[in-house]
Length: 237
Image (cartoon, rainbow, N blue to C red; front, side):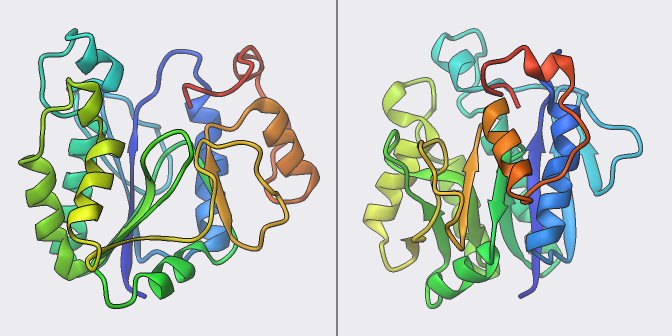
């Protein structure tokens, strides 16, 4: 396996993102072996002395809520453009691309399983009950990266609820099922999750869930800062 692992990064005030980054970083290196880790940081946010290769832009194209409300006048969310930029970095490095969102933790042989289940295809994404698909964790093979980026940057504008990324990804998969597959594991935003699954992932963990993961020995931290504890769940991570 020869892959670049990439993630977008954006930090809202008092979101806990800086604290969570260490959990994210340690989780990646416990369960996967990327040749390079690149973080595309938006809005001028970056962590001083943080590990990984950081690419920081001062601009912020906005999130899906800002596009739907028209408070940001752009066709694509900042995260989607960051994914494309990261994918092209992987392509330039002659590597496959694994996208691993900044608030996501994965356990077990996640990347190995994606490779196995993506054999013969170009890309693999996840499922969730609350959306047509899940794209917070995905693998794009090197040969398929140009097709992926070309498709996304010419796809429908995301200022329509029917065209948010999970809807667009699912429609594209239906058109090219031999090229895009779904992997068999994980929960994404769905709850509850089974902490004893051999291979799984989820995102947007609550404080209570983080404490459970620590109790089971899956993650490690000394304490949760007060600014994180103030949230009933870490929606902004």
